[in-house]
Length: 368
Image: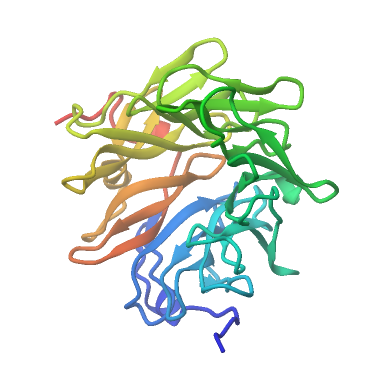
């Protein structure tokens, strides 16, 4: 019988290292278990920057976690049935709802099926769009769990969904043309706008946004994906032709400048703060060489290596290097993702900057 209890990692809670200055801190979050089970990755953080979710390897398997300073990393278990797997991809703004994926025995693989977790009800299966498998993931969550978005297998293919407590899971379709393969990645706090990507033709994906009034609207641009959206829906961020982008209704695509002159192949804008003025992600990524760096962007400084920004803020890194920034708080000061210690495995991190990143460091982008 597999253990399914929620537990606190003694490694993460009692021996995690805090690299702090009087005004900010970097906390490698450790892993579930005794610290020998890598990797761990933080995917998202609550709006106030206090609650983090992601996944960690554990003695049972890959497991979703909830982390706070008070509790450390707590494993959330998994759905009954199937093999042991769960992962937290998104969190509601107030932090009460964690969404992601877990295998309940019918998803057909490690991609799992859409799930939601709360302290009151534990982990629950969200349902499916009626495909031969329950495969899918929940990726984003509006305030108080009012709307959850993601993707699920239907009879036609993979479709983006919008889930509400009253209506359950409803398809919002895909872009016309190409195979049916759409994924919703994020939703505004009020649930009114959803962003993601789908297939316009068979050879590339296209970023889109959805509202009840407009339906699914492609942003244009070949080979693009929308990964996050500002609270008011006016700023969308993601990847476009290998460049991190910031998109607005008036300006269209704006490719963010490269951090170190563009030695990498792909740049991802993974998340933005509440008004879209601060963006984080992965820059200069080269999969062949395994190189890249977590970056942060704002209009004052341009794109900067997040490790450099932390050092400029007086936060010691002590050998930890942030590789991919994946989530950001509403005020832009708390950033989560993953990196590694010297000679260590991939490890989730929590970074709290002492002030808005727009007030830290030189007034221009840093270049080699």
